[in-house]
Length: 406
Length: 168
Image: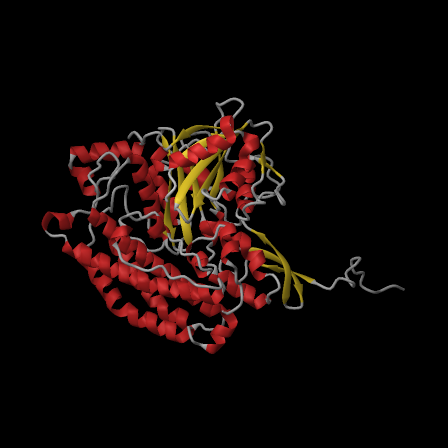
């Protein structure tokens, strides 16, 4: 009697194992599926499946007026929502030819750099977690908390911020916001220094990260890498420097670049970028303090036809009520045109391609999502590496499922 | 020497003549249209020509214009010369019944998923693509959702029982 288990044909001869990593796996920090072909612990090939949290943002945007699109952008890279929100508002301002006052630009830069710090902080500390060092993650989390408290003072929310308006901010920064910012500037350098001490010259950490997940500059460019991942490969491309927006040209900062494009360089580039962001915030805060008198009260451009007025004014002033009504009902004219605007997001060049046909909603809105584009390289980055290195590569690429799947 | 939009335009007209048209500069970015069978040649020319070197593909997407009969779908390329820091955009129009466009994957690895996404949402058939299948939507889907004939739900519809959704 034949009571042996019947194996599929060819399975004895086959020398590799197929492993499903994800879609839900604690080590992938998001919904990613990788079908790996393993030879022992070595990855022979892999196939990526994405789209598990696709929410049709581009389609939704075709039915929404400008202000209803801002909350959609929150949900792209939710580790640094304010950058997305402001990128969107800057895109609208470009289409509508709105010039924002300098103080608005500087306040925006403070918020954008804070969110860059919180984004890099998460990414770098998660790299730590994935290589077995949980402490750093818990230690820096309280400073992300402080950043979120600053957002809270300005827009009332923390993660999906929906911060700002076309033309500026919804309200001026209050004293508490500035107090918290000062506290952050005072305390964070020490924390970041210590966070660096934990990792950067840590032998175990270096051994895990060096020479894993590397990519050459040519390949990175060909794959459309942007942001810290491209800079780690040695290309000094930064949207803030190349096509400055929001008055980044007024600031003095360096763009750190790596050499090998491996996980360790990506870690170092992000670490240095946090220091640069800190310096930008300090400069911006100094510039903000230089505004005196009426100028110090400016927090939005004078564009009543696009700037959603304050709620108190809507209830008490006729003008504001009219504009509020017009904006909410989508009766303000949006010029025809097409515009591409990009900002340096937490993980790369976040672009908005906005085609307007003059209607109340975009005719077409396309998000250039950096991690959708560079996740293609994951197969190449992890080939012939160990499975455990692939996990670190995934977190050090700073893949955010919300942005990837849009 | 920084390259200017008019220089790029001259170069392209010199090389392709009638194949490129409708030059414009909306918000400062050089934009033009190209004949559909020339897209790959133009990408290649912009990539290799020593004075142009548009070697970074920023973005690739499509737009649907249902009213333009015979040229309903536009594939839009955004290219970037990182050294000179110049961006350009060009469009290739195709009719909706034979939406065949040559793939750019041989030049740009980045185009791989961007083309898959464009196929997924608009049904553009990228000829020569190594793995042209849906990327964000489910494989079983039998339509291309970003085309304009698929409207979102009408927000004023009344035929639906909204009690379950807190809108009733």
